Length: 251
Image (cartoon, rainbow, N blue to C red; front, side, top):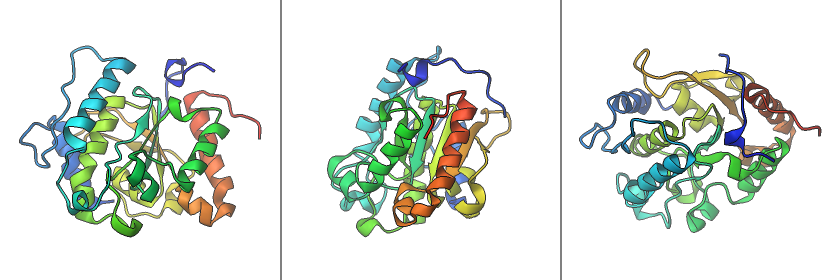
């Protein structure tokens, strides 16, 4: 199977409210060393890099900023930071909420029971984990897998925004309500948001960034508890494949 980032596509058609606007504003200003949230943007070369260049920039972001981050209290309780992994120039990025216990031990995103289901979902799409990029809003596990606190999202979200800025995906799939609400700056339920594409902008300043199609769907952990919703998630993922111009495997 050809690598996902090398496939030729036709042109694409067309919450944390306390943190989203300020995060995007800081990113629009290139997130300098003295930015509002203190995340230093990885320098962007004049020519857009391919996979090798993007993966180098992601590695710098991880090793020089994320791994040593102490911006919130999760730095005191984590075992390992969980940056995310996959193809550095992926056309498709999956974004979840936060690492769990397995991820915290291994330093890898989506490796527990929910991760296995996500792997199965990706394989059902005719893809592999190596062809996409998988990450979370938070890079550290909240104790006892509790929901992320607003200050934790505020502190950690710029890393996600920088990842998306580097990778430049053609489509984003948000897994669950927290990631969806942050990126779409809404408090709507995932049940009302899923099933159709939304526009995501890295900058909240008009004209400063192109819209990235974003498909919200259910988190694999929720699907483990509510397997009856898997059909809806598969319908969402089929729309993603169609949007990317990729075939929908028979099931």
